[in-house]
Image (spheres, helix red, strand yellow):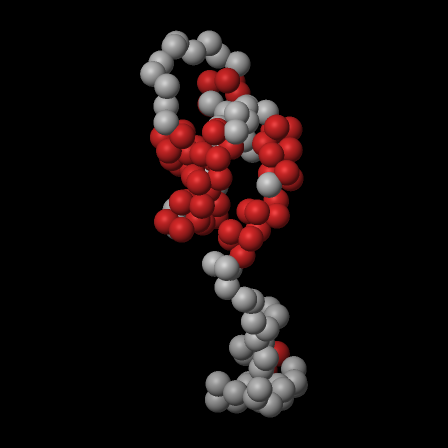
Amino acid sequence: MIWNPFKKKNEEAGAEQKPAKKESIEERIEREIDSLPAMLKGKLKDPEVKKRFLDIAKRMEKDGVDFKSIRQMKKWMKAHEAELRAEGGANVPKVETVVHEGPRIGRNDPCPCGSGKKYKKCCGAGK
């Protein structure tokens, strides 16, 4: 099952809901963020990521996308993919490869921490 950030909790459970005041997109997003797993919640709590997410959601709402339909959301994203990449591409930091420049430590070499044990029995245990 794909997570839909705009689907209300009561609709997922199939319960009837009383007519309530219309929530703003920010309120709906904030409520859904709180129900996410910790890893995703942490990323969406970042103000830049959250602002970008809200901007995209507002554009979708303006274009008349039904947030309850994953198919419509995917279709909109595919249609606007190039412009979304162009807008967000400047903010993405370049990933750099980490290169270890020191001497290579073998499993049977003495541990560099100075314990006198072999690396495989000391700091290399569990690797």
